[in-house]
Figure 1 (cartoon, rainbow, N blue to C red):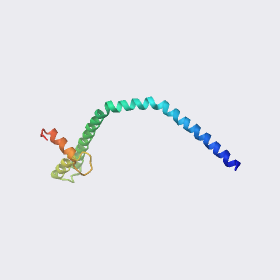
Figure 2 (cartoon, one colour):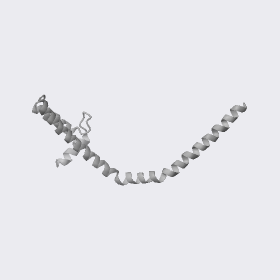
Figure 3 (cartoon, one colour):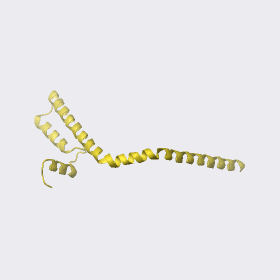
Figure 4 (cartoon, one colour):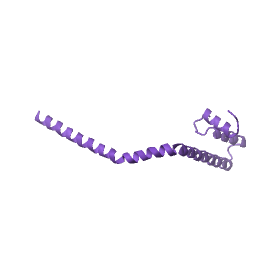
Length: 114
């Protein structure tokens, strides 16, 4: 019984020390977390837009590379490549589905009034 009481005392002391250490850590990193929060609020939408533009550019480069590889291999016809590239142009997320959001984006880009 005496050993069990000593273990409980040691555990509560260790838990208190750990809790104090975690509290100290949060006090130290709180200013940095607040700054990151401000940055996300300020630059979040602009960052998302730039990432989407970058993703679109990578898709275009990949399509060009696919065209070059198809011509080198000679396996696909021009029509096959055109169908593949056209679908992939609209399936920007590469999910196999052309979303309504993507469709609306392309309609707006082409000057259609929604």
